[in-house]
Length: 474
Image (cartoon, rainbow, N blue to C red; front, side, top):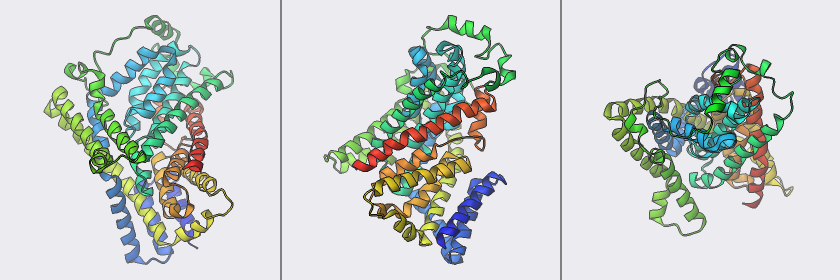
């Protein structure tokens, strides 16, 4: 019966979120309450598991999420993201789709997916005629979409990556070690595959796939005047002298005067520290000090200190405090949904579902890794497709799978990566990000489906064989 009650609880949560537009936090708490009571845990035990599960996941990822969000807010305020995307566009020219997908998947702090698309979309629109007069815009749109979400699920400190590793108790360093190459390969392969799809005339129709009101504007990439102007300017390669924050404020000149590599240190330094700790552990030369330096919490705190120092120097005290305040507000929202995902996992564990699913996973067919990985991928894909949130899909799938990971005989990092892979599948109209993406890139609904939905679906499919290969050798 626990399987039936779990299915009802998850189905009810999906219906509440999609059909009745109830906030995911409320929906997941209601689902957790129903599951605990229907499965016979009782009132006190159900509440105990919900609060205990929340606290456990906060222990795992609370500081990581908080530090990561604050770093992102400070870097946004110093114009770091705007400068980076501009420099990439100027330096690589026609190879821009590969560069942007790779950069979004590996360099950007992927917690802020909304900020990423807000900053990258204008650059993509402007550079589209330089890349290709007819298909530059859809190619860049697809590269942008897959790059953002490959980083979001595969690369620390992406929210989905951090949350899944916490629920499955996977070391962030180990996840980073395998997730970065898989995320990068996924972004680049999908960008190449999408280019091949665009060779078909039927794949992209500007008259239907571009918002008609946008095309008529002389600053739209499909407008002939704009194309000629951009093509004539191609080749200019200097860093922008000005940039604006998400709120439209002009970034101070002293911030823009700092070298880009200096402004990226709050991201680069923690990644190097975490990666060093992971390699030291894998190569067996770790010690307590190296473990301390490579600890993800400490590494991201160092990144936050660097970001704070740069902010104080470049923005001044007041604007730095404003950036931190915005980050604190966002942190609360992210922590709440992440913690509630942990609550659902705790209730599922308490129902005894782990034993039932453990029997399903513990096959002696000689291919337990394949079965476990594919099932984890499938659960995450279905949840994301239904709910419309990559993070909620991944968190919920991890909550379902976490109780039985030990019984599969598969390394937890492979299961975590499988969930991450599946959670990318088919981002579509039930996602707020979908409509933001559509509007910022000037696409019609069909155009957004042909770019973002196709690209994320390809990302999930392309990355699965890599995860399967990893699962068989670990």
